[in-house]
Length: 160
Length: 284
Ligand SMILES: Cc1cc2nc3c(=O)[nH]c(=O)nc-3n(C[C@H](O)[C@H](O)[C@H](O)COP(=O)(O)OP(=O)(O)OC[C@H]3O[C@@H](n4cnc5c(N)ncnc54)[C@H](O)[C@@H]3O)c2cc1C
Ligand code: FES
Ligand code: FES
Image (cartoon, rainbow over all chains, first blue to last red; front, side, top):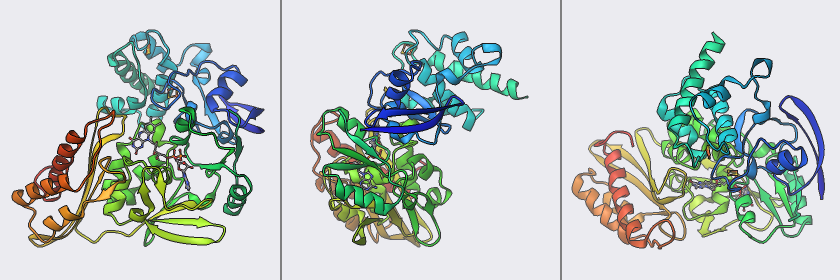
């Protein structure tokens, strides 16, 4: 069975026919070729597949493709700073060693986008709480937390 | 792989689809169902999504509190009326999974999945909550205690949909608390305990205790309740409640913990929960 889904992806309208059993993750990676979003566990544990649906962080590996109709989806490909530069969050991750092998980074960064939109000045404990669903096997999290603290400061400067 | 997917926009349409498509399954947030399918549970012929049904959305707090079955947990968690009247429920949600999970998972799904460890169940038991069940023939109301019948077993009839969770506001001066212990932040509990008490002067005439992950269903601890009701909840009473709680559960050993540790831990959590209610320790 195929179903038609139309939604907004990183600001652009998308209309596709997909196999009904696909997950949003499959739709993004295999149908649309947007491979920035990663799959690791496929079971909601690791957060590598985190994207925003209407601004909320979700695991795209547990999100039925049939459910995105009418929503606005943001993936790591949708983040850019001015003149094609990385966004201030991506830059903070790079500057603080918040990414080593990089596999968890798209998910970590999308979680950060949702966190800072909701809470622009998170405490360290709020940051760690927000990262509960994002696993990293390389960095040990210290650098990730520092990167998010830096991103929060940069966001403040950007807004002022 | 290859099941169908339907997203009805009215309840009647959903009932009709369930009737017409044998071996179909309802799906709300999908955080249990999609994992189970991936782990090799028999594939349904189709998923019928409940997310398009307006009757299952929203939290109403007029007289009785009505939590729509498909309201994402993260919305229930921050609802001011829920946090104010049912703090143990709000706390159980804060501890459930990750933010990504809570953004899509639902209270309805947590109950219908009927895991012995379902985190929202012990709080709903102490608050005496009910669920509203609907099918093409009509609507019925069942207490959460009667709804949960065994691991993966509920009172749902084939084709029936859990539409809402119903709670009566607690009496003034009621205190409640939820405590849980898991191996790591994002894991099902090894044991969880919810407790509620109504105060009358120096005594506590009404106490409710419930535990999760330590029996085939989340359950009320009625013997322990009987020990503490009408007392002043002092340390000796609390110690007796701990021992009684340990004897009225039937935990098992599995990958998360052992029977013996679950027994020990549940007693400790009951004692601690009663300390919280008696005001002898701060917020959990
Ligand atoms: C990484 C991870 C961590 C988790 N951590 C926890 C945890 O700490 N504590 C915990 O309790 N759970 C946890 N869970 C389990 C799960 O997230 C919860 O049980 C959640 O509340 C299920 O809700 P859902 O809407 O996603 O259910 P779904 O997966 O959509 O549905 C679950 C079952 O209920 C049925 N169903 C759902 N809604 C209805 C309805 N309204 N009427 C009739 N049938 C219905 C479905 O057919 C299915 O059989 C976790 C899951 C994951 C993946
Ligand atoms: S791949 Fe989705 S949470 Fe791990
Ligand atoms: S940088 Fe390798 S998993 Fe996080």
